[in-house]
Structures are given as structure tokens and as C-alpha cells.
Length: 201
Image (tube, rainbow, N blue to C red; front, side):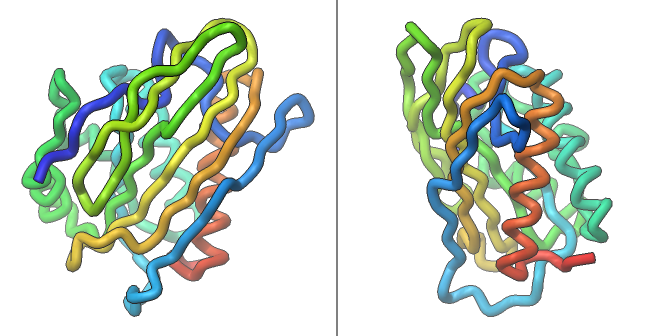
């Protein structure tokens, strides 16, 4: 299987990306789902993958996610430390599993943009996930104005390679990218704790 390419939520520089709780932003959880068949313990060592050709923004997102998971007592590692992003963004399943084996992860998180809209700018491209496979959906084009985005974060069990949790949200934001990343990851982690997928401090 392959993790097929597509532009992640960082296109045309560092633009407004995700959920934020600030007063100048509006956010909404569009959907969250936990697998009915998953019967494992809360995951404790997660490989974080952000699919993007922008290495700076990949590092920013993945390493922020790692720090916030560690702050609640969950081990995590950024995929950029051990797994190169191919120029065509086609990540082979074997590359993911090799990174998992190296870090002894019990779960993988993959984050993507489902769709996005900029004022006076249309969206294009498509992508979606099924297990470790990446299928096309939509990626956005951005300007300096506010951005409305739909973001999807999926959690996979390493042993079965099945998706055990999915979190989809919409956001409207004018905040700097770094702040938005921090707030969306905080929201994602809180939802994972609510669903008892990771431990709660």
C-alpha cells in the first residue's frame, strides 16, 4: 500500500491552518469517531506524521504535537526525525512501519487537510485515508486574509494497522500559524483523552 501525495494544510507559506479558541476565530468539530472494534489499552507511544512538502512547517507541526503529548505523559516522536518525505509525497507503508519499529511505537497519527477556502480563492485537489493508505481529497490555496479549513486527524493501531479514531474539524482563523497549531493540537489531545485513547493527567 502507498500513502499517496497531496498538499497538506501548509501551502503558499505559513498560513492560518487549524482550530483555535481565540476570540477572533470560530471553530467547530465536524465529526469524531472511535472504532467500535478497538479493544486495546490507551496508546502510549505515537509516531506523528504530517504530510507536506514544506519541511519547516512539517517540523513545526510534528514537534509541537510531540511536546504537547509528552506534557500529558504520552511518548511520541516526530516522523521527520527518521522518515524522509519523498518529493512526490508518496509515503510507502513500509517506510511508516520501519519508523514504527525503530521507535517501538504502538500507534500512528496522520494529519491532513480535507478542504479549505480563502476569500476570493477557490480550492483544489482531494485526498483521504484508509488504514495507512492515502487517497486524494482537497487542498487549499491561501492569501493574507482569513482562511476556513477542514482538518482531519486519524489515529491508527500499529498491530492491526486499522484506524481506531478520527477527528474532523472546521475553523475560521486569522491567527499566526504557530499559535493555531498549538491550539488545534491541544483540542485534538483533549478529544483523545475524552475517548480514553491516551492517558489523562
